[in-house]
Image (cartoon, rainbow, N blue to C red; front, side, top):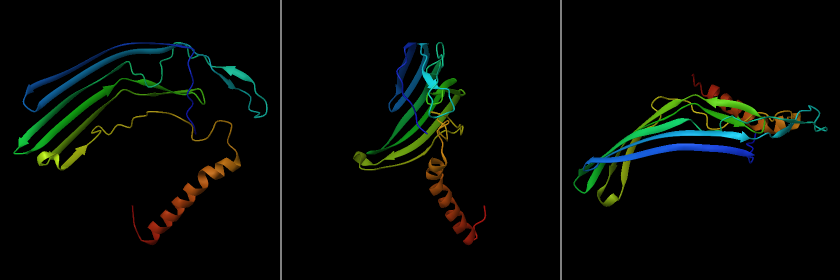
Length: 193
């Protein structure tokens, strides 16, 4: 699979971004951000080969005009709190970050297929102990508390109309053999799932 990058004929991007940071007490930082984005193709009609015969090129066109640009949510933003607690020459830092994105398109330009990622949120938390003079640190964190699966790109498992027995064999032989060997070892060791 591959990603294709192309220059669009004409695209229009407008938006507003507001960011703020507050410092209400020593060691306490509060951040907030909100973004509105209107990003879409005005003119973009790439061609592709519509003929299933790999030896004959028959151009066809896809009209992207009016469609949103890939990975461009209409709304996004976040909120964060960071608190550094002094402990002699060291400190403990508590951090929490929340972000959100509205639905956005993902376009596979190699195959002219549209996908989308639903709107989602993400919450991350961490605690860090910074040793004296920042000589060392120890931290623990959790990310994506909501456990959301987020798509950031798309592509085919197999190249559209370009797969052959040879490239299927080259692509899947070692992963399949490796899985069989590891599975055999796991069974031989008596591991149960």
